[in-house]
Length: 357
Image (cartoon, rainbow, N blue to C red; front, side, top):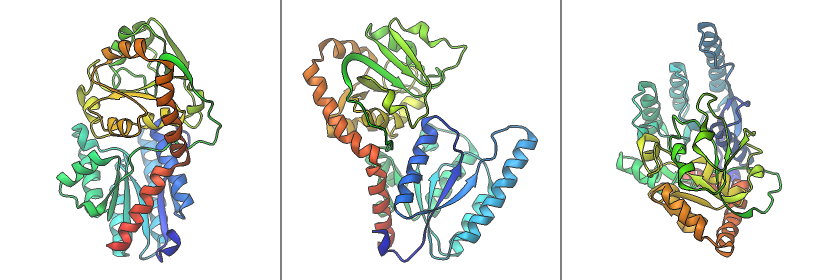
């Protein structure tokens, strides 16, 4: 496919390799997939995350140097892949990107998050979204529901591709998951974002396996009677650490699905943990009105519920045979996720759309 294109392919890469969380994992995986399709990396270095004046100046001086270097490197009529949003305010970045437009460079934007869907009032992030919306020839969104939201905002369908689910690339051999009447929660365990954890322990006496960073002063274990905290693992290694049972994809402040801005966001968002669980062959439990439910129902990789209180009945009544059917489907989809097939297909589709514009 890419060999048919006469334009050179580039991707802007945020060089922040030290992150262990899913926020860093998804962009890294996308960059690896773009590598395989011939996109040349143009690195933008994150020198530090210091909030001091000196740290800010050093960081932004490095950004300016790297964006000038990027402008010089990217050839006329090229194609540039970017990931949105960029959370570091940098007006100079927009100047360089507009200058690239004068070189007839086409933009493909991969949506990582849409803060506009979380009612974010941050002026910079609003501008970031508007810039992507106006200047990108093609935008890759999470799923069909998010695609329809973009259309409702005036975006032509010809400029949109849905990736369906975030990939979770991994080379480690995944052990076949075991049947267990248990729940796994992997990812951020901070109550500010995941207040539902206060209720999860009260809806089931079955084991709950917890993976991810916690706030020391929150003591989330107090809310559980049969939980085990496994700690924090590098995101590239997490899938092989998961054991079995069901992976929970939830967000918000309560046992009821869709509460708060984070819970409501699940109607449009593809949480990275969905691909994480499936890449380990673990079936999932998701909120029935979430965008993830579309994938779960289509490929029969788990169950959809409206309230965490339903988990007790599910675990009480699930048979090993029924769980294995979900797990076998999860293993099939998980293999595609570990190979990066979803983003690869989306990126090829995006390039096809550019050829037709």
